[in-house]
Amino acid sequence: MEYKNDISLVICGAAGQGIATVEELLTAILRVAGYNSYSTSEFMSRIRGGTNSTVIRVSSKRATAFLDRIDVLIPLSPEAMKHVKGRISSNTSILAEETNIDVELVKNPENMIKIPFTDIAMEIGGKIYSNIVAVGVLAALFKVSEESPIDYIKNRFAPKGESVIEKNITAIRRGFKIGKELYEANKIRITVPTDKSIRNNVFLSGTQSIGLGAIAAGINFISSYPMSPSTGILVFLSQKAKDFDIIIDQAEDEIAAINKGIGAWYAGARAMITTSGGGFALMTEGLSLAGMIESPMVLHIAQRPGPATGLPTRTGQEDLTHVVNAAHGEFARVVYAPGTPEDGFYLTHKAFNVADQYQIPVFILTDQFFVDSHYSIPNLDVSKINNEKHIVKTESNYRRYELTENGISPRGIPGYGDGVVNVDSDEHTEDGHITEDVHHLRPKMVEKRLYKKYKLLIEEAIEPELFGDENYEILVIGWGSNYSVIKEALEELRRSDIAFLYFKQVYPLNKKSLEYLKKAQTTIMVENNATSQFGKLLQSEFNFRVNKQLLKYNGMPFSVEEIKKYLEELV
Image 1 (tube, rainbow, N blue to C red):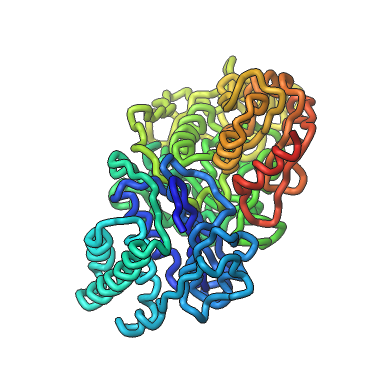
Image 2 (cartoon, one colour):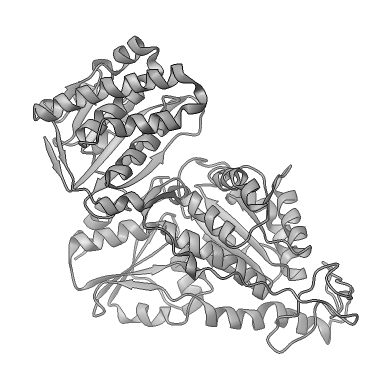
């Protein structure tokens, strides 16, 4: 079987079999060899057992979207093929040891290749090396130099000692020999073009893009309580803490985390918290405090399916309504929803500047699919980075909540100047003392925190991006992580009457959004929730009702094929 230009590899097996290691090694080796690659994982919420899978997509062009199609499948456990049975076709090559092949699920016996991964691994030193044998096989099928994975192995496993390194090298060589024989015998051939310039690309996960954006913004404090799928941000920043002088606080709970973050901003730090929907539910009182005392705050919310614990390691877009409306009382906020690692980086950086300038909470709303996917991208352009800090040196007559024409008061911090920085969670006067002046001051403070800031934020709201012919009749609407699959589906359809409107800022909405929406004869909302939460937001903000909806809420991401099929049936 020969695969040209674009290939989708799936490694599937039980938790603890080192599938993530295969993903890490293979994507690194392929990048050095000049291959465009993309990977994403889906896994069960357990340490061992169950069945997990990783997709590694390699393409002649930049690949950033999830495919249902499986070209090459490596099942590492007896249950693996059942886990992905709906995606196996007659064109799927299956590389596996005999005990892991479910013959009833094999669509084309000619594409079934038996490889004794475990037997080879046991000869080397234990079944733990079976996944490294698989890496060797795949490296050979991609015509990668045999020394390339060996060099990577030496660096990757250096802390584990010479014995472990040598066994891994042996596993690579044994697998490489098998892969080379399969290629030369025409059992399986992969002929995806390479591009030497890709070697200079960076291979980022969504998690890393958010973390790097925070570092670029000058983050120096993060307080969070671990919660999937957001914990990667806390881990990533912990790894970089010494290099960038970041204080890392694993809080005792989510309530403490947000309050510590607010305290850090009060003291002049640039702080962030990261959590998921369930953790954010506990933070809403603290969010309301930030709104009342007009504290900047940056909150990363990585969505997962609920309610309650729901599906802790799956994906969804179920927290938009929660984030837009959370907390008691009324105050301004901004919500960004990155769909690419570039957006993750630049929007996170922007979130800190906007929070600092307008003294409001700013959200970065992602999901499991986004944070756990890895993308090969050109280097990020740091020349665009400009950190805007809006702290003033206080004078003796300083008033923290001075009523200004635009609603933004000068923000001072304790110890910087001669003034006293009073803040109060009760309604307060301009100098930060409690008041019950309901007839005069209270309305002005509400208007200051809400209407005046909201007016400015709408003017600065990011305009949605249009992909496709401007003379469209059908408009597909998406936000956040659905960006890549929708865009690729439309590229494959090649229809001038269908366009895609991508929102990376989902609240407040840019005024020009309505112009795009009204221009279409048919509008289609694509979301990973059951109630079309963004569709409802468009209706509440613009009194605009979307015609059709493509909704998915089983915890899995959309695939290119799903969206393409839906649009083909529609038109």
